[in-house]
Length: 297
Image (cartoon, rainbow, N blue to C red; front, top):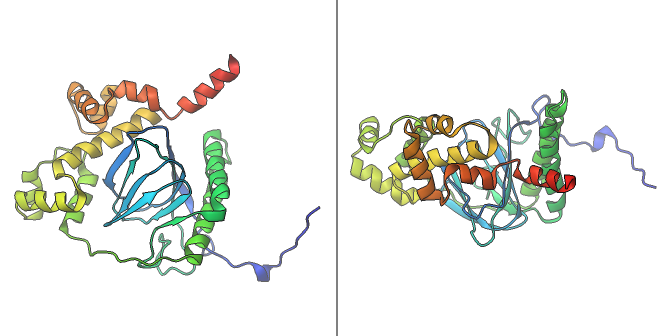
């Protein structure tokens, strides 16, 4: 038997009244040795990331973090970040995006980390609990009942509180380089990647020569601006292929390619599979359908 009682005096609030996190997005990337996501950012979301298996690299702003089983990350809104999985040990990466919250010890709404703290730590003794909460989030998100989203918000709040506890109890300082004009260019591309974008157009918008834009963007992000545009479109297409039933033509048009044949060729060249084969191999519900079929047989 276990019994323990608690008083209000023992409760230390984490969030301001009425400002608990709301779940805005949940994802689980797994079983894909070619998984990567190029530099991008979210203007209104904080991402809570958990690595349940595998290895890879997460880049946040100008810093790189080696990931392994048990790694956790906080990606603040506005932070430039990218992710790549190891081919030998594919990442199992959970991401819970939260918004509309206010921590009591933070001056601004929607931020979790004090300045100059590392956004990457190990879950330690909390690893199993964090994994369980992500699994529960997935379960209730798929229920689609009247109360399931409210339940998801509460689970997301629990996750955020655990992350808060870990990062406050084991703070790890690091330096951040000041952003440059290439950050503004990356933000522009992220907001306009479904429209035609050229170096000449970027040069005219930012009043910087095409050569200088190309050189500095490649130096900071390891990829040319135009190749980044292509990768950004294809990364969005990957998500649509594995999370929706949209047609190939519809997906092609949504990510900025009017010519579906050209889109399919680019996709296969860069990701080793044609789009529909990629959907067949890595679609979100594949894991569920395979489990269901094994139970029925």
